[in-house]
Length: 429
Length: 183
Image (cartoon, rainbow over all chains, first blue to last red):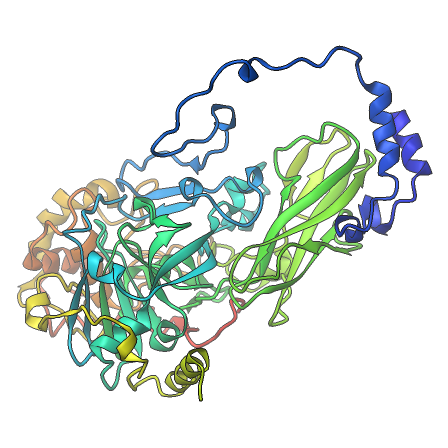
């Protein structure tokens, strides 16, 4: 390790914030001054054994298959699934392994799940979508009907309103990024704009809310304002190019971009226009945000601006000192991500991370920043800013607004402590 | 000449200003495959009960009639007195300002109609929609009675249920038109 440190001292690192944060310019093709030093250290440590041709290069591999699977060596990349509920069959969650993924797209098999009565096995030929209530002509659509309509494809994040709620508890749990934040995914969704179907039925005078009901055992329902429904809401039929998965609502789900995941009703079968919200159980008893005075906020739809570092993150171990890439995802229900700052000293100093891509609205944005870890304890944080100017709040700022019992819409800054031994832990800082 | 995109934007803009009107989107671009149905045809599948009572079916029930049904269908998970069991919500008692808060039908739910709506569509979890409309009136009456909101012989029906005064009726702040997530 002293070899590396000597090399690092010689190098002209472009340090931009405390505790080893390096300029994002290093990621922009402007060269990583000092990288040569690390390469030299590695070369000195290299062993001199011969490089061999591996066995799998000496025989044919397996045949093509109808539907692919990940490598058996990547079998650890799995959702974090809870135990089945004894009292509410099928109810529960599985969480996306954010810390094991890269880029912005969540593979379909790893998209998070939240069900209220399990995953129904729906025959699309038997399924129907009803549109009624305050419309001029109630209509019934089959799955096949919808496949014939003009479609749109968009990359959108989906986040459960209860995501990250673990970090509202009094003690910071020693948990992974998936366990805390894994009710978050991002996919390319394709489907038919709801406005197209509402136009066909004809919106009657007085309609101002849209209720949606699923065909699951819970017949879960939610209400959204009609103005949002006409803006960008659509009926999703495809997820990352293939028919949406049963656990995402096959054969069709409502998709409400940027808003709490629960309103994107899965297994969608009924859309009813009304002059008021239905006040379903899941928009009164649940998914309402308790305030310190005992009242509660209702219909708090958009997800707040938020980010987290996915690597290094909770329960990981940094096995060597030297150059690491800090990376993570940022998103907001109020528009595109414009800026992500990273701190390695618990928020005392910040550096701008490099944002990949153009910052698509209501989708995950991947950020990166090089970090030179020299063995000192560190607290890694990220702070996102969206196009509307909203800045991700601290944990304390979020908690101050709510009852201690509230678990919904938590978007506080995540802190990962790195010990001198390289152990990464969830902390409140 | 408007481009299709600009035209859609203008129309969407109009719709946002006049949410009561038709979207007026270019109908010629869609195949119009929806089949006409009548509200009568949908009565069996439309389970929505609104706070004003619309959607409530005929029939009636009292807490006295619901007592045995509750014991049989609900008590194993929700407790004999609605006190809840580990992992299952309590239905009665509680307070939103206690430490910790306990949010129940009596202390939190703003509308009695929601209890009917939810029980009919989702309860019991092992066999949702297995209760008859009258049985739902009975068991909802029992839950409201456990909370001291109606007497044992109060008859719940489509007229009396929406009129039950829920203690936390004014405990919610509607944020539906606010586009930011923080309070």
